Image 1 (cartoon, rainbow, N blue to C red):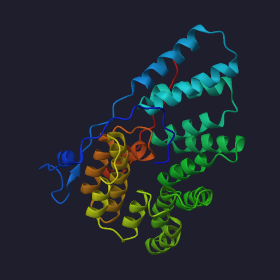
Image 2 (cartoon, helix red, strand yellow; image 1 turned 90 degrees about the vertical axis):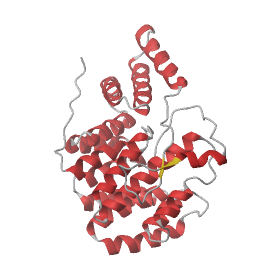
Image 3 (cartoon, rainbow, N blue to C red; image 1 turned 135 degrees about the vertical axis):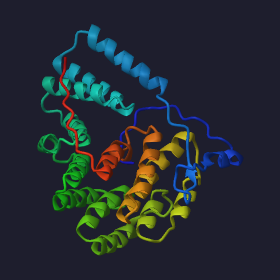
Image 4 (tube, rainbow, N blue to C red; image 1 turned 180 degrees about the vertical axis):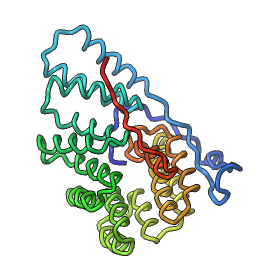
Length: 301
């Protein structure tokens, strides 16, 4: 997961008797998989209203540069949460022009550079964030991800290790460290994962993903676990966004790129835009297809 989520309305989930309707087969999909398909999350009206109100304040109110910078940043976070990446990045850049010491804005700019494949610019942004705020733990995660995708794996491992050390019982921190370590040595990564997972809370659903990667749970059992203790359609979409991404990574590592691609498509179908897994699913698909990374330049009009 590893995200900051704007306020959204939770929708009631269908009765358990109707959960079977979420499980569907498709001839174009791998026949061994029972796809769990939630309704893609819709943009909350609260988020839309928040964007409108922030825009009105920015355009009509008399604000100091610092106040304007904060409002541009806040609106950028809102845009980012609904998948409007270009608008988000424009606002983050506006915020930085007004307040060049805003570490959070540099962190988001770095994420967007990573997604577009501009890794050098991403490193500069994350380094700026950490220079301004050395305690900014998510800048370590995001710089580690940029290093991972830039094939600077040893440096990525160092950032992921530092990120995990700040919260040793977090399953997602363990997973990203495992993914990077696996690029260096699959056996060493597996051994380290088994050691790290001793700190996990077995009651947390995310522990199941680690158990699967460690070989302690089957793929079917992992997918079945998605449906346990659900409280909303939103939670279902969020879990599927995560589980499909890491299953895709696992199938890719086991020489099954087509199955991995199908899983990445399912990640994108959830519309959980602010999750790390959704952010990088397209980049993963491009890498699998051997497509050249495209650097997107964002110029403010």
